[in-house]
Length: 93
Image 1 (tube, one colour):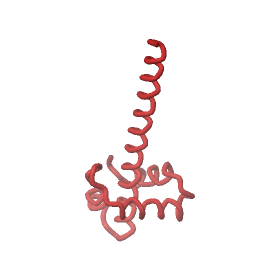
Image 2: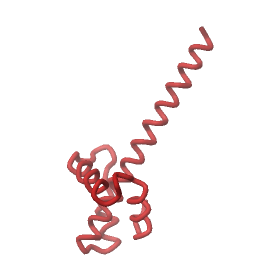
Image 3: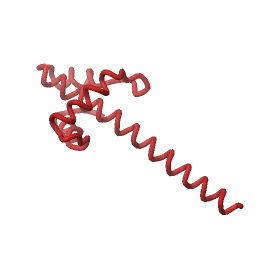
Image 4: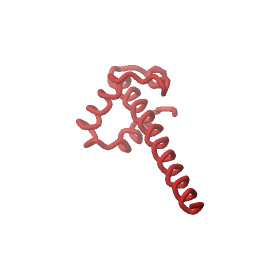
């Protein structure tokens, strides 16, 4: 029974870490989208960085939907290229 409990705890920990990483990556993707969107609107890098500062616990669903649409239209749904592009343009994490 002890081995089963340890295995179950390890699986639970792995799932928790996976979900935490997915959430962190999702917030970074939304921030990258907001940054790139602000740059496309003609804002400076400093203004775009300010626009990308959001509370991770209160991201509006509209931002999430807009980010997903942007990813589909510009990056074949992939998050990595958007984050790299935003970072190269001056996004400060």
